[in-house]
Image 1: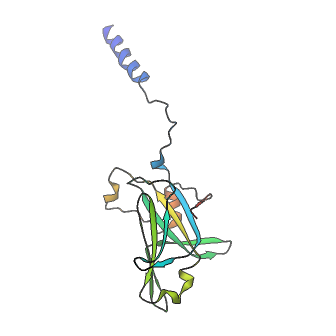
Image 2: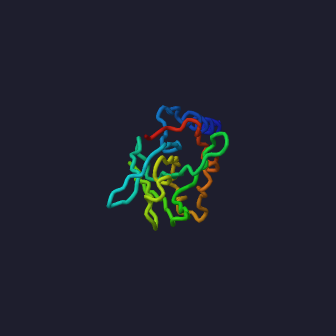
Image 3: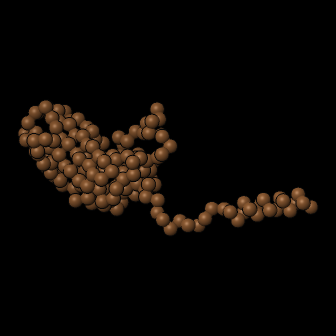
Length: 171
Protein backbone atom coordinates (compact mmCIF):
# COMPACT_ATOMS: atom_id res chain seq x y z
CA UNK A 1 0.00 0.00 0.00
CA UNK A 2 2.88 2.36 0.82
CA UNK A 3 4.41 1.65 -2.59
CA UNK A 4 1.17 2.55 -4.36
CA UNK A 5 0.85 5.80 -2.40
CA UNK A 6 4.46 6.64 -3.21
CA UNK A 7 3.81 5.89 -6.89
CA UNK A 8 0.71 8.14 -6.90
CA UNK A 9 2.68 10.87 -5.15
CA UNK A 10 5.46 10.75 -7.77
CA UNK A 11 3.00 10.66 -10.69
CA UNK A 12 1.03 13.52 -9.13
CA UNK A 13 4.22 15.53 -8.69
CA UNK A 14 5.05 15.22 -12.38
CA UNK A 15 1.48 15.90 -13.46
CA UNK A 16 1.14 19.11 -11.46
CA UNK A 17 4.64 20.45 -12.08
CA UNK A 18 4.38 20.44 -15.88
CA UNK A 19 5.19 23.31 -18.17
CA UNK A 20 3.60 26.65 -17.44
CA UNK A 21 1.27 28.32 -19.91
CA UNK A 22 3.09 31.63 -19.64
CA UNK A 23 3.66 32.21 -23.38
CA UNK A 24 2.76 35.88 -23.37
CA UNK A 25 6.31 37.01 -24.16
CA UNK A 26 7.28 36.58 -27.83
CA UNK A 27 10.63 34.97 -28.44
CA UNK A 28 12.18 37.38 -30.91
CA UNK A 29 15.28 35.25 -31.24
CA UNK A 30 13.27 32.62 -33.09
CA UNK A 31 11.53 34.94 -35.56
CA UNK A 32 13.03 35.46 -39.00
CA UNK A 33 12.62 38.89 -40.52
CA UNK A 34 12.74 40.18 -44.09
CA UNK A 35 13.25 43.81 -45.13
CA UNK A 36 13.64 45.60 -48.44
CA UNK A 37 15.70 48.61 -49.39
CA UNK A 38 14.10 49.78 -52.64
CA UNK A 39 15.59 52.10 -55.23
CA UNK A 40 18.52 53.20 -53.09
CA UNK A 41 21.66 54.91 -54.35
CA UNK A 42 25.19 54.28 -53.17
CA UNK A 43 26.87 57.38 -51.77
CA UNK A 44 30.60 58.01 -51.96
CA UNK A 45 32.92 59.05 -49.16
CA UNK A 46 36.72 59.06 -49.13
CA UNK A 47 36.96 56.62 -46.21
CA UNK A 48 34.60 53.82 -47.29
CA UNK A 49 34.10 54.45 -51.00
CA UNK A 50 30.61 53.72 -52.31
CA UNK A 51 28.26 52.49 -49.60
CA UNK A 52 24.72 52.33 -48.29
CA UNK A 53 24.37 52.64 -44.51
CA UNK A 54 21.18 51.68 -42.68
CA UNK A 55 20.10 51.05 -39.09
CA UNK A 56 17.93 48.11 -38.09
CA UNK A 57 14.60 48.94 -36.47
CA UNK A 58 15.25 46.39 -33.70
CA UNK A 59 18.49 45.16 -32.27
CA UNK A 60 19.72 41.76 -33.34
CA UNK A 61 20.78 38.96 -31.05
CA UNK A 62 24.48 38.03 -31.13
CA UNK A 63 23.72 34.66 -32.74
CA UNK A 64 21.58 36.06 -35.57
CA UNK A 65 22.77 35.82 -39.16
CA UNK A 66 22.17 38.64 -41.63
CA UNK A 67 21.92 37.81 -45.33
CA UNK A 68 21.71 40.48 -48.00
CA UNK A 69 20.52 39.81 -51.53
CA UNK A 70 20.69 42.23 -54.47
CA UNK A 71 17.89 42.24 -57.02
CA UNK A 72 19.78 41.59 -60.25
CA UNK A 73 16.81 41.30 -62.62
CA UNK A 74 13.06 40.92 -62.86
CA UNK A 75 11.42 38.03 -64.67
CA UNK A 76 8.08 37.97 -66.46
CA UNK A 77 5.27 38.59 -64.01
CA UNK A 78 7.40 41.03 -61.98
CA UNK A 79 9.25 38.16 -60.22
CA UNK A 80 12.55 39.40 -58.75
CA UNK A 81 15.85 37.56 -59.20
CA UNK A 82 17.95 37.73 -56.02
CA UNK A 83 21.73 37.28 -55.79
CA UNK A 84 23.44 36.81 -52.44
CA UNK A 85 26.21 39.26 -51.67
CA UNK A 86 29.19 39.31 -51.38
CA UNK A 87 29.17 39.10 -55.15
CA UNK A 88 31.55 39.94 -57.98
CA UNK A 89 30.18 41.10 -61.32
CA UNK A 90 32.45 40.76 -64.35
CA UNK A 91 31.67 43.67 -66.64
CA UNK A 92 33.30 45.08 -69.80
CA UNK A 93 34.70 47.92 -67.66
CA UNK A 94 36.21 45.55 -65.08
CA UNK A 95 35.18 43.81 -61.87
CA UNK A 96 32.52 45.25 -59.56
CA UNK A 97 32.29 43.89 -56.01
CA UNK A 98 29.33 44.09 -53.65
CA UNK A 99 29.97 43.29 -50.00
CA UNK A 100 28.47 44.15 -46.61
CA UNK A 101 29.08 44.15 -42.90
CA UNK A 102 26.67 44.31 -39.99
CA UNK A 103 26.43 44.74 -36.26
CA UNK A 104 23.48 44.21 -33.94
CA UNK A 105 22.36 47.79 -34.71
CA UNK A 106 23.14 48.51 -38.36
CA UNK A 107 24.61 47.35 -41.65
CA UNK A 108 26.60 48.81 -44.53
CA UNK A 109 26.56 47.60 -48.13
CA UNK A 110 29.69 48.39 -50.14
CA UNK A 111 30.37 48.65 -53.87
CA UNK A 112 33.95 48.68 -55.12
CA UNK A 113 35.76 47.77 -58.28
CA UNK A 114 38.99 47.81 -60.23
CA UNK A 115 37.72 50.59 -62.54
CA UNK A 116 35.97 53.97 -62.20
CA UNK A 117 32.50 52.98 -60.93
CA UNK A 118 31.04 56.23 -62.29
CA UNK A 119 31.20 54.53 -65.70
CA UNK A 120 28.41 52.13 -64.62
CA UNK A 121 25.84 54.16 -62.68
CA UNK A 122 23.21 51.47 -63.34
CA UNK A 123 25.00 49.35 -60.69
CA UNK A 124 25.12 52.18 -58.13
CA UNK A 125 21.75 53.90 -58.49
CA UNK A 126 18.19 52.67 -57.95
CA UNK A 127 19.35 49.39 -56.44
CA UNK A 128 17.04 47.08 -54.48
CA UNK A 129 18.31 44.87 -51.69
CA UNK A 130 16.53 42.30 -49.57
CA UNK A 131 17.80 41.84 -46.01
CA UNK A 132 17.00 38.51 -44.33
CA UNK A 133 17.62 38.01 -40.63
CA UNK A 134 17.91 34.34 -39.74
CA UNK A 135 17.73 33.56 -36.02
CA UNK A 136 20.94 32.10 -34.68
CA UNK A 137 21.48 29.26 -32.29
CA UNK A 138 23.47 29.12 -29.09
CA UNK A 139 24.21 25.48 -29.81
CA UNK A 140 27.43 26.32 -31.60
CA UNK A 141 26.15 25.11 -34.95
CA UNK A 142 27.86 28.08 -36.57
CA UNK A 143 31.11 26.15 -36.17
CA UNK A 144 29.65 23.09 -37.86
CA UNK A 145 31.40 21.56 -40.85
CA UNK A 146 28.04 21.39 -42.66
CA UNK A 147 27.54 25.09 -43.33
CA UNK A 148 24.22 26.32 -44.69
CA UNK A 149 24.01 27.31 -48.36
CA UNK A 150 22.41 30.73 -48.30
CA UNK A 151 22.98 31.52 -51.99
CA UNK A 152 19.47 30.39 -53.05
CA UNK A 153 17.04 32.96 -51.67
CA UNK A 154 13.97 30.75 -52.19
CA UNK A 155 15.63 27.80 -50.44
CA UNK A 156 16.44 30.01 -47.42
CA UNK A 157 12.86 31.30 -47.27
CA UNK A 158 11.53 27.74 -47.39
CA UNK A 159 14.03 26.25 -44.90
CA UNK A 160 13.41 28.89 -42.22
CA UNK A 161 9.65 29.18 -42.83
CA UNK A 162 9.93 32.87 -43.66
CA UNK A 163 6.84 34.65 -44.95
CA UNK A 164 8.10 37.08 -47.58
CA UNK A 165 4.65 38.17 -48.75
CA UNK A 166 4.62 41.18 -46.42
CA UNK A 167 8.19 42.43 -46.58
CA UNK A 168 8.83 45.53 -44.47
CA UNK A 169 10.56 48.55 -45.99
CA UNK A 170 13.65 49.95 -44.30
CA UNK A 171 13.66 53.15 -46.35
